[in-house]
Length: 304
Ligand SMILES: [Fe+2]
Ligand SMILES: [Fe+2]
Image 1: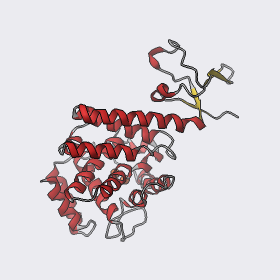
Image 2: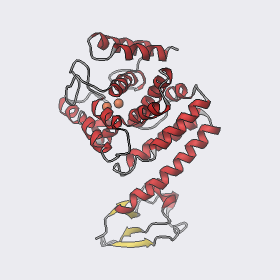
Image 3: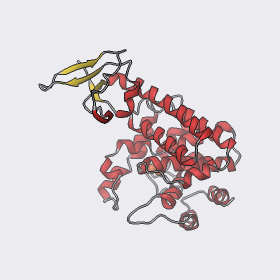
Image 4: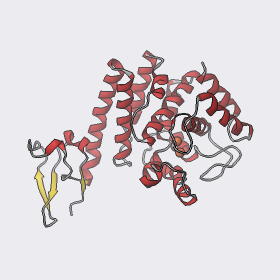
């Protein structure tokens, strides 16, 4: 029995090695091209292939080829292009990683972090510039890339080892991966969420943890950070209301809150200047929600 799924436009240039199908008017799947055959030129307007389908089992392999190509393009952008192109390239990688089959789709991201790391060594202003540039990507993607850049800045400031910095960076990039498993209407809602919607939203922490279980090669702190980044030291956080939180989760959680206040445009709350955002977080530090030392280090890192 064929299990077919619609093919995304971005997968088309990697489809030569895979069979593609379409559905006849009576709803029967029909082979459009065999594996190894090229696409029939000129058969689709404006490269819109929305009527073509791929076997579900082939999706992971196509996604992998696409991500390898995107990493090469990212490396090229880092070495020869401006910051706008670099951020677009990075956002595209994250968008593809988050929109494909999540159980297999994140394997190329450590290499993305590696490329970013070497880019930053060559150009120390890169991370700063990445956060400042506003890309038109979806909110979750832009937010994940910004948190990654801020956390990496923090790690460079703290002079962490290369290995630790890369693990931290991957944890930052994937801390909200569970949002991909929450209804789009809730994620993209501009108004304040209702209580019911917020209780659904809060499940992204556990869902993210579950997705990251498919990646045994990732350091354990990556999945733990996805689970704990909304936990607070006074037990007021979610999903479990625990007071014992890993150090990585504390750092990413604090920077996550800072990024949300500072960079995210919200209709019910305008984005804030760094000083004002830090003042709001400082109140929560005084209340015992965040680690004071991490907060002070973040302030020093941001005003360096
Ligand atoms: Fe989150
Ligand atoms: Fe977040």
